[in-house]
Length: 83
Image (cartoon, rainbow, N blue to C red; front, side):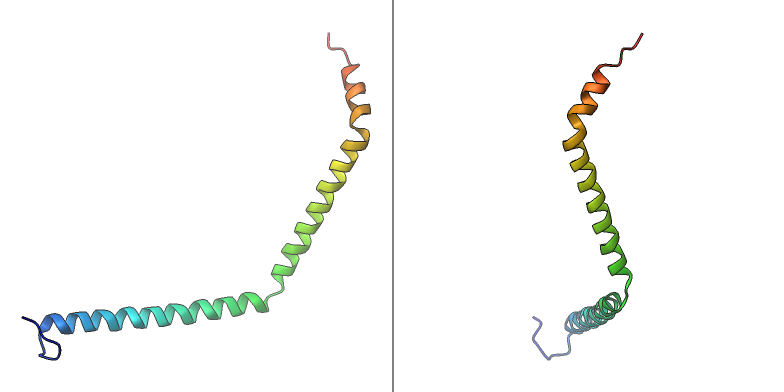
């Protein structure tokens, strides 16, 4: 029977495993935190948002144009005959 503190090898293996996993978790957490801080400090995210807004405005303009000129375009296209 294995009792806590009796120096059994299996107990040392589990303790070592726990210590290793804990150190890995702390290290990974620190790296993720540093990476997120770096992302917050960069200005590249703002550029992506600006491009997304421009694309959204372009899509809205195309949709509005089709809503206004759609019937006229459809009439013009349906009047074309293919021989």
